[in-house]
Length: 244
Image 1: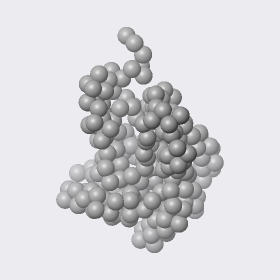
Image 2: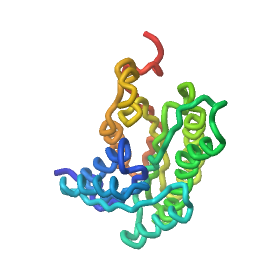
Image 3: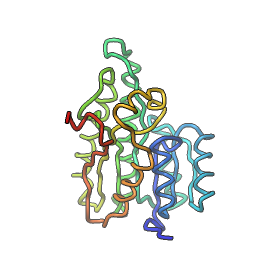
Image 4: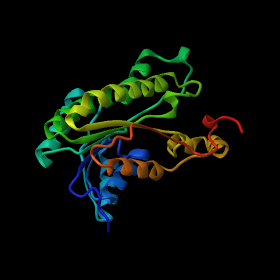
C-alpha cells in the first residue's frame, strides 16, 4: 500500500469531528503519524481508535487552541515525543449564527479567538520548530465565507477573512526557511450545521469531509519547493459560482 507521508509527523486541530476528523484519517492512511488536538478527550480517543483499527498511527492530545499555555504545551509534547513536526493543519473553528446587532462582544471574541487567534498561536509554535528544520507545511482551513459570507455570520466571515490575511503574511515570512503556508477554502461541507439544515444541502449541494481531506493529502505530498497557495472547493451547484 502506498504511504507517501511515511515518517511524517502531522498535527490536526479540531480533529474530533467533521473536516478535522476526515483530514486526520486521510493523513494517517497516507502514512503520517497524526497528532489529534481538540478539547474533548473522549471524542479524540474515538478518532484515534478508528485510525488504529485501519493500521494507522495517531495520538490524542486534548488542547484548547485559544489558551496560549495549552498550545505551548501541545507543541512541547510533540517535540518531546517526535522531535519534529512536518505538517500543521489549522482546522479548529466555530461559528455563531445571529445578526450582528444581537451579538454580545463575548460571542464575537469567542469566534475570532478559535478561528483566528488559535490558528496564529499554533502557527507561531509550528514555525518555531519548522524554521529550525528548514522544512514543513502549514495548511489553514478557511471558508468561502471569507469572500462571500452568508447573512448573520459576521464574526465567522471576519475570522476567515483574517485567516486568509494571516496565511498571506506567514507564507512570505516562512518561505526563506523552506516552509510553505497555504489556505483551503471549503464551501458547504457536511457537519452538524448541515445535518440541521437539510434544505440548504438539498438546494446548494454539500461535500463530505473526506473530499476536503483528499485535497489536503495532495497538498501535503507536493514537492517541498512547490506551494499550492490558495484553493477554493465547493459543490458544483453552490450559488458562489453565480446563476446559470
